[in-house]
Length: 279
Length: 347
Image (tube, rainbow over all chains, first blue to last red; front, side, top):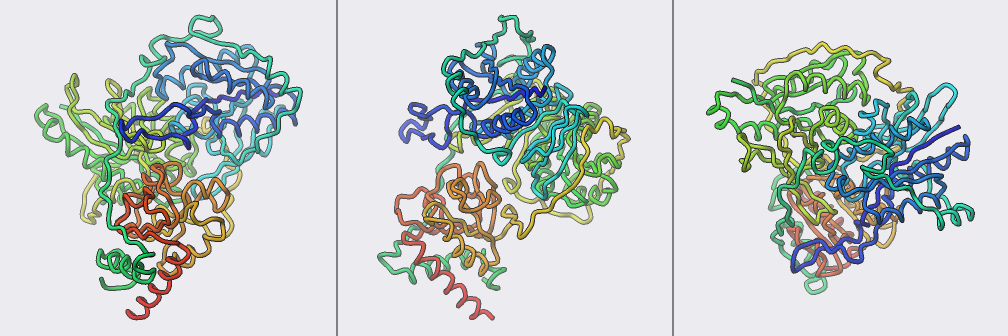
């Protein structure tokens, strides 16, 4: 039986984030919280392979209680069990502390119910670091394939997985022993429509909640949250405003004249030298 | 008396160096010079060092010295022939434990990101992703200057400066083209130290069965001299044909803003911005791009920016050297004609 674990994160939909022009701070009100899109595709891939091989999917998410909605959504998409890892003591974790916390949870689950593959999204759209997946894999001592765009085979009998990962220069077909971890691109699988039974189940489903004291898993207090995070935010600000250049209106002076003016300035600055020769 | 080491990872595949490696050496040199006086006062020295893994790649180590490395640690072994996470992370972790670098910079490429998270975790230290500003500065409570790593967050709306106190190395990943290329000195002298680290194929935990090269044209917008980029204002995928024509005339490539990529008008390889590529061309032409912050952080280092937009209030005009308020479907064809005329006049 196949056991997939999918780690998801609830994130603010960054395409909707705005800055208050007066105070220069983030406007969070009205910004919807969503399941990180790459994680949703990672979960979709796990669901595809559960259909092929039989088995089950456990979904975990570290975050505030509000992340329950994403964990329910995971059930709707086809997960069997979902766990919220939530405690004030986990707050303020950077990627090192996050990878510790997730690795502890994954190890605790693995001890009871061995995991074959851990799925992550390639990165979260709020932090864009892509650091947690490889970090968790190092702690588990499992191989990791990042930027995975497709899984060719999961062979439970011979304990091998073959996947395609996309690098800047080519696509690699790589074989790794199980258990293994993957971080997934959107190409890995389309988001499935929720079958009615899963949809109905998700409405009533209560995700488990694991805290530092719930007894599911032990955590070293020095390795979680702010205490376990080597990096701290030293200062924060809005980017300096650039000094705008010249603006010309093609409707007023005519398109030909506007283009001539822009190209003259570009030529004068020397950036077209290699194309046009001379300055 | 100690050595304060500033490390740059030299990324190569099949003997081809990713130019971000040289950019990192440039940053490492600048950071080292910022602590030189402090180091001298404490009886320490500073060194810029390159970390190179591969198989039969020694010529690259010599190149690294010419780009500013005082010393290169070379892990040359068949197990490192192709990049794989486990052996690379294990090899680098071992030499980092041995030499205790103060700062360690890795390119934020697909390879570098895969590696950096693993190395930082194995070393139990902090890692700041995609830094756009790096400085060694005095920080209250620290006897030595620390690395202040600045990175855009929330789609570029916020600049956060991150500190890694009490942990070493202070690690950062840096996107290609954020920092300039350092000077190349063919006379530069340095040391190459071969490190003997054996990692078995078994420990490598991954076997690459095949490489598939992309069919058709591949774009490399990061190192293009001219980029003609399109946004939502194009109205549809056909608009890129026109931009392609202008790009061709200028010997450049086509870029795009995120909404066009999300809408499937053009492939992700063309995307400029926080979630796409950072670019630093000589000329950047933005057509029908409104100029969301997340786009601007990816292109504002271009030498010269021409923006074309219907909306006179579009934020893209804030970073443009010249902004043309007008219909791109009139402006771009006119531009193609005028550039042809300029080229003929010069010929």
